[in-house]
Length: 194
Image (cartoon, rainbow, N blue to C red; front, top):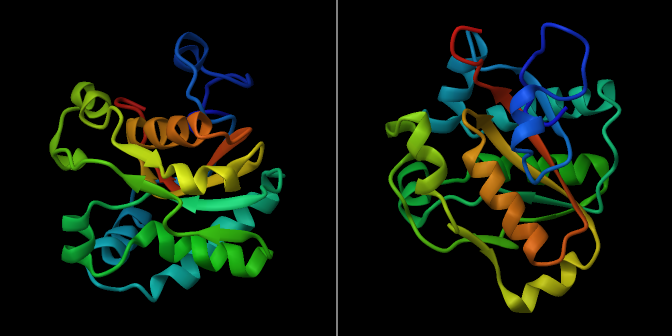
């Protein structure tokens, strides 16, 4: 329920989530980050194929229905660094979040959450360094924090590998006043050896 990794036995949480629970309450995921989905997401993210957001947001919306996701008050995306945004030309998480907001009739905000600093690219780091690389890398502007007041927020991203990005972003939203944060992602990287 929290980390989106499959369990061998029916249980709501894995051992890692029991030991070190993520700040988000639920994680809703469409598929494993494996063939053929990894190729499609890579094209969407790095291949300048923003039009794939329509298909991917439709798949995520169907997964949310199938998983009986609680309806949030607000949808927020994980922000990109200025450099990544300049390289790609668009934020893939925002492309999905805005379509979900429009289709579901939920307020979606592209700039409520901001990146306070740029760390090394997560993909280039070993799993053990990913969490420290993003420590306090996200914040909500004080002027915008009032819009979070006791609201349930859906935090949208494309892929979760270690969960470090979503943990830090969710913590920033909760620190700014959100009552609950759920993660909505397209894909989850399978656990090593999984």
